[in-house]
Image (cartoon, rainbow over all chains, first blue to last red; front, side):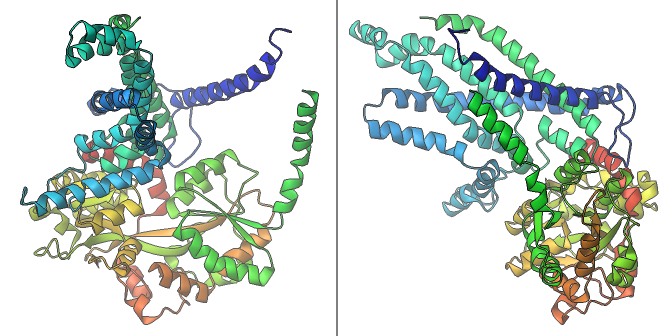
Length: 283
Length: 341
């Protein structure tokens, strides 16, 4: 006890938080197995109907579409974020490094709704991109970007990028520069150095970044709600549409639990698939 | 360590002093933004000048506030709650509302028929969900009936609220020879409208933004939103189809367990004062809930603002509020499964 005098002080709040979160999860669980009573806020007796109702093809489609959007977002964020993280780690000027960091982290400080509305202004029929393309004469009529999976993914990449860059930068900064210098001194071109040294050694960061981006995106709500315009729906939007907007809390709870189970299952699959890749990066 | 725990204990002991101060105020639960400002600048001002009791607002979305009220049952956070008529029935069914003593609300004698919702909640102002469109973007389409929404030239041009499909569900049923209680009759009709939908808006701001930038030049729109957009310079026209606009009424009620029931009745009376009602109608472009409200000519002329019994009768489709509360979940689920997804 004397060797860890603050243990109880630190553990108590954490235990209380864990207790609160577990209680909330249990409340969702008990709602999911209660019957919905139309016109009342109080749920009825025990039932599994909320889960059997999920067997419709519609819900399978939304769950699959959600997984697809998450995967697209994670991969796109990786491709956009890797060069940025590389520049962040390898830039020599402290001012340039700070500039990259501030630019990348800024989306996290904007409210989700404000950030999403800014994308509506950019992607709309009268938005920045369409206006520019029309002025340049490259298109004759506005190109429909809103209410598509592409626009939802674009906006989601914007908010996922900071997390990805920070994770990749942490992995890249842990690579001992001696390896890269040794390869260069042996005549390897910069591309070969990157492909054979830097990229393999940064795989733990890549795996962590992609997994986090995937899980982070799964719970997205405001972005698909506003940019998707009801035409692109993710699980959280379905929870809102079918559960909360119609006061059917038991069904909302069962949808939430199904979403949670699917996230955990997909993350487990990703973890399994990524295990050999992570081993490459051990150094 | 002991000092920290002692400090926390003293803080906890000091907590009961807080409600004692709160008793000096009337707490009103309402949506945020312009709704809060509307009540603060009209009824609350009058109430405070008459009673000396300040009004404090707690704001939130319809569902958030409903959930909070449910969790605080018997010991409510607010004395007064504003919500939509059919959602009010969910409060009432769950025994969250106090029964109103109409003798303590003299102005309630002037309520229009449609505003007499239940013994627990009454209308404060009314509006319609109807057809709004951008005449510059849908030049050759005339809107005289709800059936005009089905015209092929409107393919990919319409938006409707994603939070409440009751308007289109009931209209489709009516066009198919049914009504709200036999809404299934309109299912095929509504499915036929699917190609014309471009998006579904999620709130008032989203609706305004989609019609202002022309993304969805035709909307099943809240009349007050259309009036607001017009005042902001957006070229939007509102029509009441020959079948009528779908009436919506926002209501007020006293929360069960409130310690300030008498003051709450006084607040509601101030809210129903004809002058306050006229002022609110002017600010929002809404129909007043009392027949004695005298609106200025400009407000009276607004589409969807009803000032005569004839207008209330011929221009409004009224979905029975209790039925709407009970059917909301079923309608919402059907709409999400068959129209939105």
